[in-house]
Length: 402
Image (cartoon, rainbow, N blue to C red; front, side):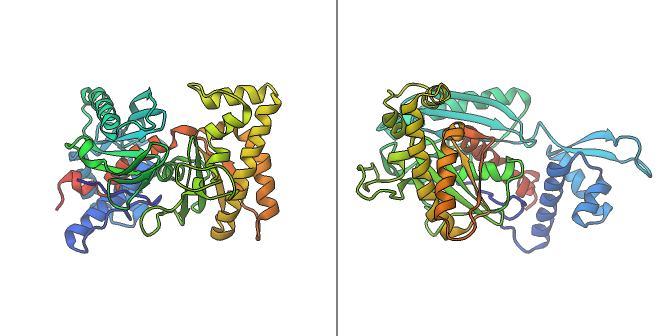
């Protein structure tokens, strides 16, 4: 079973509910959930004011959500309010949870996020997955999902679904990885290899990173280009608070934009791709360093110490990023570019040459470049939160509304 991916910051748009009385009720349940999740604790009267329904209608919906374990009553509101105090409502910390998982080139990660957005359990394993059989990788990931899920169950948490981030192209509305050059995977349906008892979504890690930035980033605009840079480099475009996927779901392959057509061969089959100049391994090669367990930590330490070769390599990576991003900015005109992923830790050395290229090559007004606060955790958190957003978008599915 494939769970829908809910991508809209404003909520309620991911689940297409029927235009019937029951469909309207489910939409209103969602509006209540989103209001409390975004602004709670709130009284019934405050919820009614925010979503434009009568207090009686909201009370009926709230009672249903409390019975379903999605909302909690915290007791009377704080003193000082005019009129009769109402009972404050909050999203339940004991309701359904979302499981996010990430397949990286050199790691596997799993986390559980509750409806309040709190991480309840987490596990990370360092393991080389390049050219490793998908069956072996997903067997290890499934075992990690099982262990992390078991940590959540003693707290009475139910599992709403699993979302998996992968560093490759995933066909839209499927769980098929069409191509993941840095893993060596091609045309792999991950569905049969993942736990069958949960609704499962699979998507590109850059998409999940952008969604995490949209939902969790402070001050992130509703129009931005998110660059997720690690061993590979991906990008995702958010327009008017929604992820732009492209016809087949392949939008955002920034890492395979050629910046020097005569450059070195890339695993994708092209030459001179951005990843060959700005990916982690490329920067290490240019700096004359051997890959270690914490590649970015090594680069950060050496750059901070003033090593000329490392700083030169980072300037080259920033220049290549700027060249590739110029084309995207000229074409798409985003409000901002957000640098995420592991290389966000190297922003002090990457940003000056990157911004120089953008300012010198952009046809219109150059957009600002910011660094994600989420860093390398973005794809994993975005995956888990996508499941949580699914519950907020259609709580009627949990409440048993047909």
